[in-house]
Length: 238
Image (cartoon, rainbow, N blue to C red; front, side, top):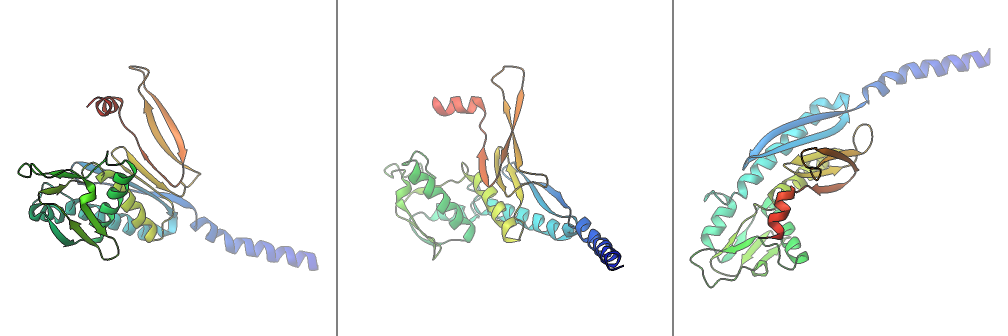
């Protein structure tokens, strides 16, 4: 009799727990939108089915933030944050968190590549200004930028996709979503894993001529950039 009672208790407990397990089933939520400069952002997040409303809100907020950042770094708009700095030139500026984040990333890459990559360039009028990222000084804590030379212009177009993908991933994680996949026109950043295992990044192999072969690489907590073969040729032979 005692064993029968224990079995009934276990069955009753499992019946109570099953709806909880069912509602905790991980699923993908997805959002795609254009932010600026013809850039399309795709965001996937893995969350419990019951958290759909919260996950959707996080997706829209991350997309809106990416759009705002894109506007701040738009060199073609004289009213943007970077456009105003470029117009004024030499000086000390208080910068937004978004611009400070972009500057920090860009200056690190410039240092790693010993100046092969550089977000600075000289205006046509400043013929004696040397293109050199070391003429920029960022105080990350105070969020101030010092431009040391007149006629020095900043251009983030070549790192914009990677920087935005990193920002979106950071935004999603700040909202509590540890498993997300962000793709922006050839740049992919992943955090955590998909609902059924590691995230997979598809890469087309065009080395076979007309026949295309796609490889799917399993990845986790990485950033990936794919470059077309013709672009590599242009980079090797400027």
